[in-house]
Length: 245
View 1: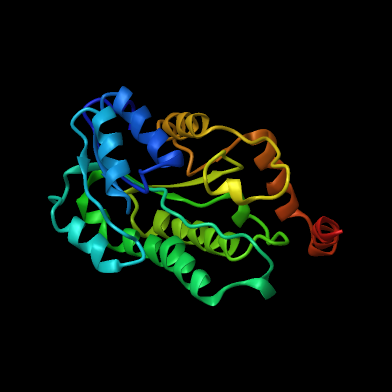
View 2 (view 1 turned 90 degrees about the vertical axis):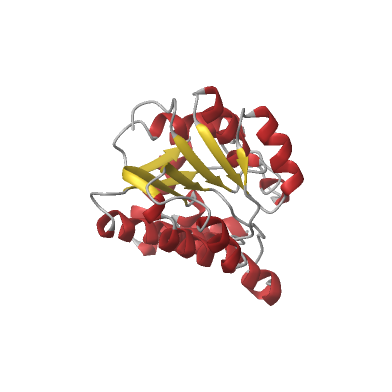
């Protein structure tokens, strides 16, 4: 997909953060947008900034909510489906709240499965299905669960879809590093190489015009975490254990 003028793009998780920045960025490129999230008021404000964007409120924690919106979109009418929606609740495994964890898994992982199951027929031939993983999914770091576990699973899902849906659907995986959003405000540590949602959105928009399967950024940070994943466990686990001290 070279250029987005006149393209129809559905962004799930568009009410704030990277999703909202993507909506503004694609609107400037001349795309037609469908904007989805739980917060209808925030979506309405964003739609007013994005021309004639359509608002379709949904909650990925409720599978029928997604299915209801899918039923309103004609098959083959979209050029891209982009799912940025996620919950984030960092902490040690021993301190997890079962109810909050179940909801996080429902949105981050099961929601991604439903997007992967229901939305491909809506895409034209060659359309893009874009799932958001995270650098947090590269390696199990202390106090990163269950978010990092779900993002590791999303990356695995995208890899599977890349094979299963080819060549009709162009599946992409986005793996951001730290981005300044309301989610990362929960972190109580200095976040290396943190970028703005606008910077993240521009990296995605540029990356979707290349052939790269995975779009990861900022690379000055993400390559380091990729290296950690590539190390033997005997070394990498010793390094991550130091983070607890």
